[in-house]
Image (cartoon, rainbow, N blue to C red):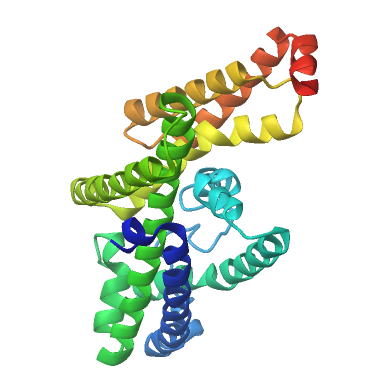
Length: 304
């Protein structure tokens, strides 16, 4: 509702509040949860599998997880579009730098809370329920409520970022550029707001149908990574990359990821997960398009 009403400016203001809630909530909940579990020495005894404490293990979560989440965070439309919404270059540098520091400080918190939950509730079947169970049943009610508020803030801030990506892509990149170049600002804004409302409703339905946060995020990040990572990076650094080649790369990467996901029920074949397969096929198709591209026509278009 707040994004549909106020767009990026309102989201920026609300995100500041959400950031404070997340920082305070997890800063309070993490040490108390660790103490309630008996400290780090106690949770270090948790060994549900032989490679549980290996950071670079090949299974998921592990190296295969990096293939899912790293490329999308480099080329995420939501992050890039927010950068283009900044007031000036200085704001971009400060914002991106502070964002990096915040992510670095926050990155270890969910993992440690997950380890604590694994030690406290070893028979818990649904991984998505680990954090709520920990906050509700391990911490004092007030501290648990603050922790749940932090989780809710994280969810809502991620949701408005995705809505921003969807609305701007549809209203500006598709509608304004190709469908109706003469559209007024009021018309584009109206379409963006309806897109936000519709996307929010569809996202709620998907959340109910998919049932797993991890599963939904895996699909989301995989599709963004295999469709955008190679074309954007190649377009930035290789002059011979053409629009047709980028489109072919995107199509091939998405198709490969979907085929591997459908034929293996999302498991993949060893190291060849849907994300890895999509990135590999996208890279191969991009190399093929370079081989058949006309460098002279591309140089001419760059000069023009």
